[in-house]
Image (cartoon, rainbow, N blue to C red):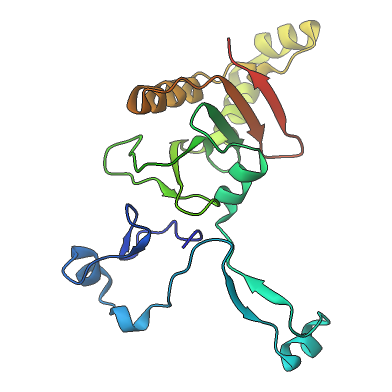
Length: 195
């Protein structure tokens, strides 16, 4: 269930398929018997059969483990396992995420998705168009800022105010201050203490 991030008939609060009367089944026009069984992240699904081992070059009997979605793995890989640590990711969209043990919508009606840790949730705030938008704006209008950043030896994008607003929104909803940030996406990852 850690790979579930789409709006299928999934119950994000209980990490399972939605109840039989949930409206999402009608919207999808699907049935429960058409859906796979859901298991917690880290569960052994099966072991590799002889035919599959031969086709892949992997050893027969190798356990196949239930994984998680790419963002959930990125957040876990950055070491963001508590709500006081935020994960900033620069990609197609820029996001800030925290991992929590309870269900909490950072933005109303946008459910937190399953974390790569069983039974945990990832609350996320997205800045749509993400870092591409920041880069485009910098290229079009940021020539003075680029020159100043070069003379100071820092990146022109060092102030990402929309992500700070996202962090403040998450903090307001959880009541837990984000005290450090982990940044990923692109070629580098960094950790920085919040002031």
